Length: 116
Image 1 (cartoon, one colour):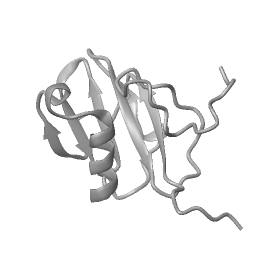
Image 2: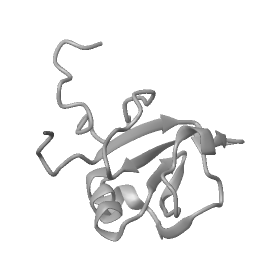
Image 3: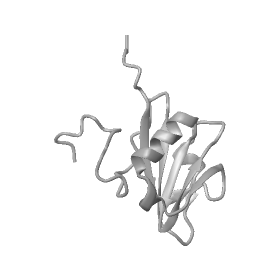
Image 4: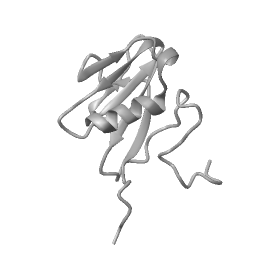
């Protein structure tokens, strides 16, 4: 069974990062020129792994040859951030948090009615 080809999911983590690893694109002053939704589309289209934004003006698009998970990351040192990790096959862990940067859109949780 199964069905539905849109199995891809996003998980957001806060204040952990793959610092200086896997960066393939840097978008300077991203808040003025794009959005989380657009950055996510770029990741999906180009086969990247994650979007990292935070207490800095740029966004970093990251690519790894494996499925990035929380276990790969380390606590962010000297800054705050959120990292949006792409799970193209779905089956994403449920240990993420809600994005403050994405404008309240929670695409990864379609059944968010009533859940706290």
